Length: 203
Figure 1 (cartoon, rainbow, N blue to C red):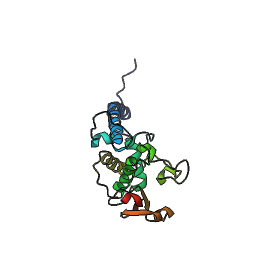
Figure 2: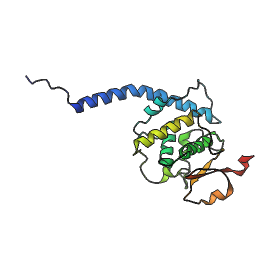
Figure 3: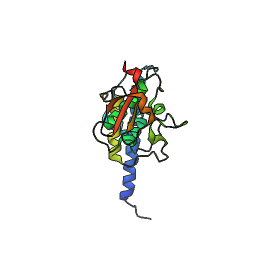
Figure 4: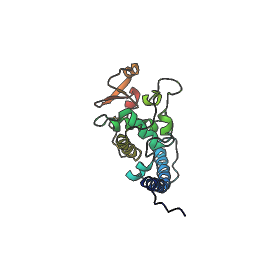
C-alpha cells in the first residue's frame, strides 16, 4: 500500500487560488452588473430599469483582477484606457482622461457604452484613444498602476470625480500638436495633457 502524501505547498496554493476564484466569480458578476447600470445612467439614450447602486472599492478590484480579461464591460474598458493613456503621469492627468471618456459617454454624438466609445476610430484611422491602435498587447504589465486606474474608473462610473476638464471631449499629449486642436476650444491643461471641446459646446 502506497503511503498517503501530504499536499505540497504548490498544491495547497492551487487549491486556495481555485477556492478564491470560485468565491470571487459571483461577486465579480454582480459588480459587473452594477457597472452596466452606472454606465446607463450617464448615457443619454439608455434607460435604467433597476436601482442604481454605487460600486465599492472591493467590487471594482474583483473585476478583471489580472488586467487580462477581454474588453467587454465598462470598468475594464475604462480602467484599461486610463492605465495605457495615463499610467505613471502625475496629478489630475488620469482623472482628466476619465472625464473625457465619461463626457463622451454622456454626449449624444458618441456611443452609449464605454466599450464602444473607447475603440472609436479603429476602423478608420486615427483612433480616438491611441493605445487601442498602437499594435501592442493590451494586457496590464504593472499591477499597482492598474489598481490605481481601476479606482479612478470606479469613481468615474459612480460620478464621484469632479470634471477637471470643463466638459472636454478631446485631449492630447503635450509632446504632440494635432491639427484638429486648432479648431477646438482649449478647456484645461494638466502636466501631461491638453483638453478641448467644440467651441459651440461652450455656450
